[in-house]
Image 1 (cartoon, helix red, strand yellow):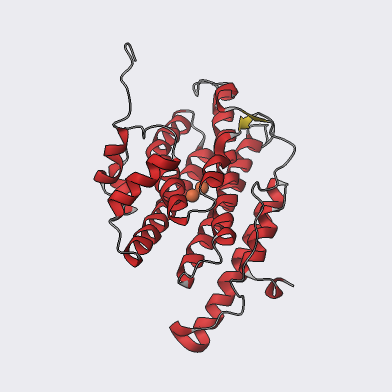
Image 2 (cartoon, rainbow, N blue to C red):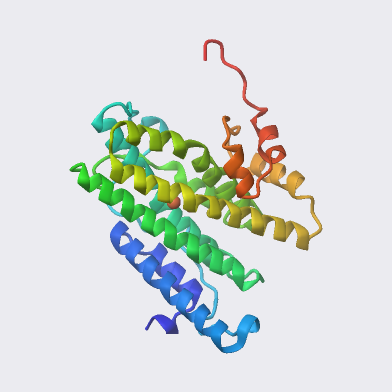
Length: 287
Ligand SMILES: [Fe+2]
Ligand SMILES: [Fe+2]
């Protein structure tokens, strides 16, 4: 029974489910159970409620279970395809589906891995909601792939995406800095261009799906900055200084402009957080 599991155990179960559709279906079911338990608790006793599902603690796997396909390649070995062709657009949707599946695991992983850290319950509400939305995003991308005669697993994918999670497995502030505030914020920068690719190709289904993703990703980045600021405030740390230290420590390489400054601002990330992290870029002649 769902209600007998703690939230951390639910997170672990999602992480240990290999098949993408099974993983995301379970993720959505547990997110709904959590939402219901939280709503019931609020109805009964208002803000200081006791939720029927406990947070609990869990030992998440260092690597989540993954399906046999797609084959995971070193980033430099993943074939680059031009988005001007249908094959290129399928590759783009496949890459986004892969990112979404990783994001499902990343959000459940932050719940399980840091379940022992004393945090307000709203921290868990936010990441459960984000995990639920990522699960929906994965399914939307799978539907788009299937409409074009392909499917998730048909192409090779990027193996490097879990690295940020491994590197920050012991560091919650590092995790927040690198995953939502760098990697997911990067999604805000590049998604409008992707939407244009599919608008030009008159693929309404993909345009609508990517617009849902674009709108919802702002809140994931915002959850990251909100809890990053919270932890800085709790320890009396300067958020900008700590952000720069942690991104330099855990993120390999400089951040790449152009930035979507408007959406980053919506998500609570000011320009002086990310612009100084572009400084390491060495201009290459002719590029
Ligand atoms: Fe997403
Ligand atoms: Fe996200």
